[in-house]
Length: 114
Image (cartoon, rainbow, N blue to C red; front, side, top):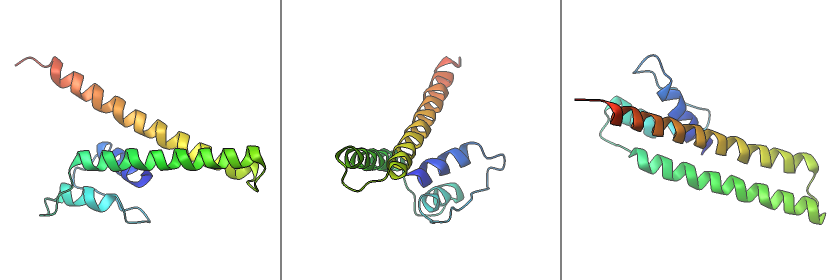
């Protein structure tokens, strides 16, 4: 999820319209690169967002499980629980920032007079 969301943020903030970077995992950015370069294989933006939201949900459930394990004393260390909760928090904050930018862009388009 983070790779897809960071890809969206990277492309949205890119000064060079043709520049697309590939992350170390190679996932997420390939779909965006194919859309940007005009390749025959296209991934809809909505599918990327749906995938990103699903991955945020997975991170949140992992964080919840880590915190539950910490509370019950089932072998989860404090640092593991904190890392899991911070990952979920950062993913949510990134998704929220992308949503805010999309709403801002929509409002900007709707405010245009033709």
